Amino acid sequence: MSPGVRIPPLLLLLVVLHTAVLPQFRLFGVTADLLLLVAVAGGLAGGPEQGASLGFGCGLLADCFLQTPFGLSALAFCLVGWFVGVFQTRVLHAVWWIPVLTAAFATAAGTMLFVVVGAVVGQDHLISSRLPVILAVTALWSAILVTPVVRLVRWALMDEGGRRGLVLR
Image (cartoon, rainbow, N blue to C red):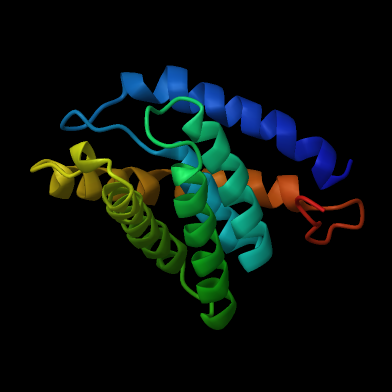
C-alpha cells in the first residue's frame, strides 16, 4: 500500500480524534493540538518535504473547524513541519528524548507562530493572558503523544519497499 492510500484515512482518523475525543481531555482548560503534532511528526519521520506537506494538509483540515482566516493554520503548520524536518536531518537521534523535546518546542513555536501571524492579519483576539498556559500545556501534550504519532506517520509514509514515500506528489 502506498502513502497516497494510507495518508487520507489516517488524517481523517486524526481529525476525528482532534475534534471529538481530545477535547474531553483538558489540562488547565487546554487540549492537545493533534494536527500540529502530525505536522511535527511528519518532519521528524520524513524530513522537511513530508513535514511541510503533512503540515499544510493538517492545517487545511484544522482551518475547517476554526473561525480564523482560512489558510492561517495551513501556513503555520507547513512552516513548523518544514523547520522540524530541516532540524531532524541535522541532529543525531541517538537518545530518545530529542524527538520529545523537539515536539514540545515545535508545538509551542507553531502555536506562537499561529498567534503572531493571526495578529498580523487582524485576529487580535488570539493574543490573551492565557497564552503562556496554552503554550506550556500544548507542548506538554505533544511531548506525551509524540512517540505514537511519529510511529503512525512513519508507517503512513512508507512505500511498498519499506522506504519513506512521497506525501503529496
